[in-house]
Amino acid sequence: MDLLTDSFLSAILLIASLDSEVFSIVWVSLKVSGISTLLASLMGAPLGFLIAYGSFKGKRILIVCLNTMLAFPTVVIGLFVYSFISRRGIFGPFDLLYTQKAIIIGQFILILPIIATLTIAAISRIDERYRKTAMTLGANRLQTACVIFREARFGIVAAVIAAFGRVIAEVGISMMLGGNAKGFTRTMTTAMAMEYDKGEFILAVALGIILLVLSFGINLVFHFFQGRTRT
Image (cartoon, rainbow, N blue to C red):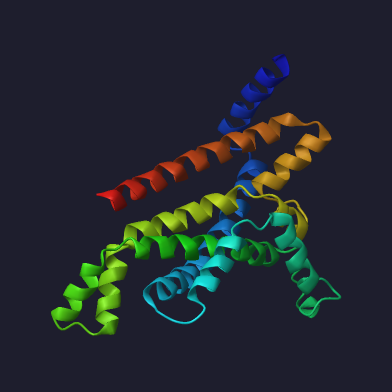
């Protein structure tokens, strides 16, 4: 108990001192997670919208595949991406391994199905009468799609927030593809794992506190938008 108390108090002092190493690690985490979430949103939201709004053969199979991808362990995704970007991989000449770009690629694959499936769910909840009313008033397919997208916007934003919360707390992909290089690819979760292995708990606890605060804030925003979709 004394170890936990001392580590917690020391961690608070470390954060209060605005330690450069702590905030360098936090910045890397926010940077790679933010970019991967942005890219996944730009692709996942339109993909989910097209799947939910469209009617085509294999639609149900595609949705099942996306739902299956939600259960992919981060280690599996890390191994998959590693096989492509390692020196013997197809994209080996691009020297992506152990870089922030490698982490972004892995995180992108991790959360793309999250955004797509939650977007499908948000679109599917929109009353069919919105589409019929828009078409009755003379709207074309594009205008009708914009109306539906606008009605589902809170659900889609909630999907993006949930995806960001997922990647900011993941460790497997960041460790396997980033290599945990200090000042370059070391994220909050990989730094916490390393400090734990070293038996140094102060930095790990400090990063844990920051991560919990970020996660709490993200979940508050998520529940806000989730509440807006129900009103």
